[in-house]
Image (cartoon, rainbow over all chains, first blue to last red; front, side, top):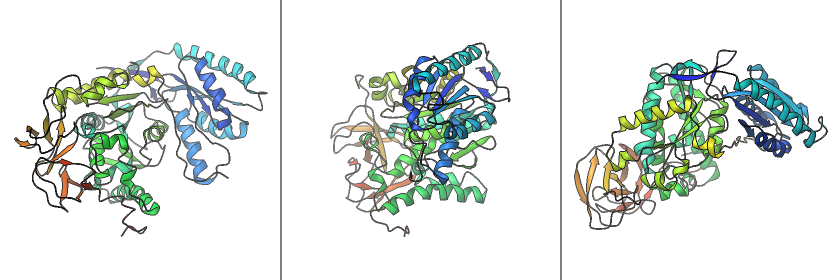
Amino acid sequence: MTLTAFRRADGRVGIRNYLAVIAATDAANPVVRRIAAAVPSAVAITPLYGRGQLGEDLALSVRTMIGLGSNPNVYGTLVVSLETVAGSRVAEGIAAKATRCALMGIQEEGGTPKLFEKAVAVLREWKREADALKRSPIALSELVVGLECGGSDTTSGLVANPAIGLLTDRIIDEGGTAIFSEPVECLGGEAALVARTPDKAVQEKIRATVRKYEEIAFRAGVDLNKTNPAPDNIRGGLTTIEEKSLGSISKAGTRLIAGVIGYGEAPPRPGLYLMDAPAPATENITALGAGGTHLILFGTGVGNSIGCPVSPTVKICGNPLTCETFAEHIDLDLSDVITEGRSLSAAGEAVNAAASAVINGEITRCEALGEVEVAISRIGESV
Amino acid sequence: MNRAIAPKIWIIAPEDNVGTVVGNEAPARTIVPLIGAVSGSIELQSPIPHGHKVALKQLPIGTEVVKYGVVIGRLVRPVGAGEHVHTHNLESLRGRGDTVNAQGD
């Protein structure tokens, strides 16, 4: 299938023309939600906090907001903050990535009703410009694909994730880029991952990134398995983090792992990367979207409804019960692998077809329902 | 599931000592066919829900449970062939901050 997208001035491609409205400080969250609701194709990005942060924690928040606002699927981003100094560090970063950007402060605009009117006028003008853009053919190698799983059960590791892994291999073979994350869900599968690079430094980075999450449980003095697998995973038959991990990593396919990247960072070159970010779905897909993913392939078992506001999130499921009872949230039903004995390679082809349709403009369930959210990790305390 | 889907036990790797029941919940005493890496059948000793694991042979306490050809934990109770394997008898070996000190030894 021919893939099409919108070509940006700097050569990047976007599969959507979202208008992003970012609350750089949380006092702006309510007005940002009202602005986004007033303009079609606008998405609200309303993380909490944004004031009283410092050091690495502040850097991570700002980097993630910049990454979300400059995701290639975004045509223009409006940054709103209580006062414009906090917003400017985000807006300047977005403008530097050649995404259209404007900044408004609630104090400077004389309150939220006035800001709302001005913001909606700006977004409507951007929408007029974006609506005039045409899609043109692109290569798979121009895309960055995020890999996620959530609401996992044992079918995730039997069907959805390995089927996604077949497309991951194809993306890497064609010179594209894919990012898998959730290092805690590599615990028990490190040997297989490390064997996928001859580079000793990358091997050690993989081991250290996974170990970091095990050490969080050691420091807390608790059994990590009381948190992950989560109650829904356990109901779905997953017993231990090792079992969940081995199913989870199958979505990353089998090819060479090029490197490890930090939370919300963009891959430096094409290839397959492990991103260091916590596993809970909203927090993880926020990091993937900030890393510039064009779309996210999201394997689920018992069902998970959430998606990324800037990166269409394709829900792929192999559990026949979930595909029946949770159908409004499932983009691709692969349950015939279980019910009819359909082959995994046929399921992989179906993942490719579904991903291609979404790249070319087909709206995902998350987009249609508005089930999109962000959660930026906090790695330090507020003061 | 509204549709009747005959239960099967999916074996991922030949060295696995557990399989995954897929399809409708299988009642005790059902003989369920194995699919995937191993062929044959096994008689279930307890009802096993869709997606849950079953022991493929008798496994003494302390046995490392293998799925995907990789260790996924250790048995804290003995399990007979055809019995349910889950949180009541299988424990993780990783992230055990409850049993390991902060240095990770």
